[in-house]
Amino acid sequence: MKYLEVFLVALRLGCTSFGGPTAHLGYFYDEYVKRRQWLTEQQYTNLVALCQFLPGPASSQVGFGIGITKAGLVGGIISFIGFTLPSVIVLMLCATFLLAYSNDLGWTHGLKLVAVAIVLNAIIGMGQKLLPDLKTKILALFTLVVAITVIHPLSQLGALIAVAIVGLALFKQTDEDKVSIKIFNIPRIVGVISLILFFSLLVILPILNFVTNNSWINMIDNFYRSGALVFGGGHVVLPLLEQSFVATDMISANDFLSGYALTQAVPGPLFTFAAYIGTVMSGVLGGIVATIAIFLPAFLLLVGVLPFWEQVQSNRYAKSMLKAVSAGVVGILIAAFYDPIFTSSIKSNMDFAFAATLFVLLAYCKAPSWLIVILGLLFGLIFY
Image (cartoon, rainbow, N blue to C red; front, side, top):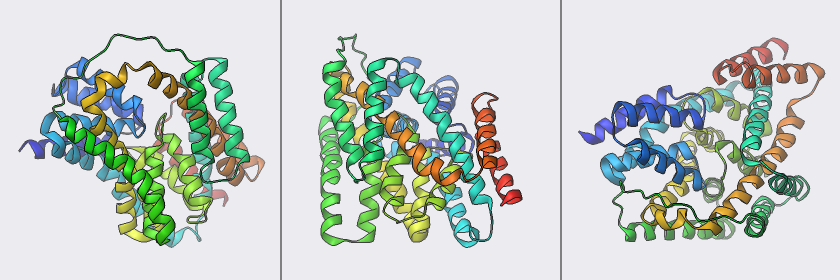
């Protein structure tokens, strides 16, 4: 019965949680802390802090962690399925529909202009939070320049490793009070196994991809690596996926940007964008495989770190590197905003004016994302 309760609560949240990761955390707080009291406020705050510290989709990791507190690891998986399933189904249906009709309709161009407004808004919000001083701004500029000028699948990863190393010298973190998480009873051996799996797949999948040259292994490898390297919020997965699938001609820029815009209009985590890409590439099975592959590393890391979190969160070296990497991902997102989003979307003065209007509605008038998407669709249908 507790499994059913976990699933139904998560499913309802998955159907109604619009607004992105920050909004999701607010929905979770209202439902799980205030209404159901599955966690105390302090426990919830600690869990959110952990998930912000780790790479991956923070809101999905928090939902997964809450499921663990209620019903163990199985409960975590059930909670994830419930929260993710609605948006995955909608995006897979949209991908199937767009494949059949995108050549006949102009709305895909409207969706690309929606992506311009949404990503610009995300960049500004992340920049205000993650680039508070000159040091972090310079690190962001460095990763931007590398991402724009060095055309190589590993250029972004190399830039992030470089800024992480520099961060050790630039940011001197002091020890803070340790805050313990007492609600997870995951044995350390389970944590060790999860971490071994996380790093093993990160190494083995690229090797298998190179040796076999299999399209499915290639897809899994790219999605897994993207899911494993996302710091700073769900929007950061955009440049990683673009480099993996658009730059290699596995999916067109039009389909990619249309799917990204649609992802903003549905509830649930931004990482379900993978379901859209996978469906475009390989049908329904591709959508399912892509979804599992992109979320798996985040959950392996969470399960792996939970038993050791008290030690990790107080490590000042880890904090210094994380601060630098967080700044670096802003630069990578700006690079992706320029190419392919801006360069492939803005084709006329009218396009620029409309994208600017959408941005103002989103950023300053606080219009909901689903309304921005509808306006973009109408613009594309009327003018294209």
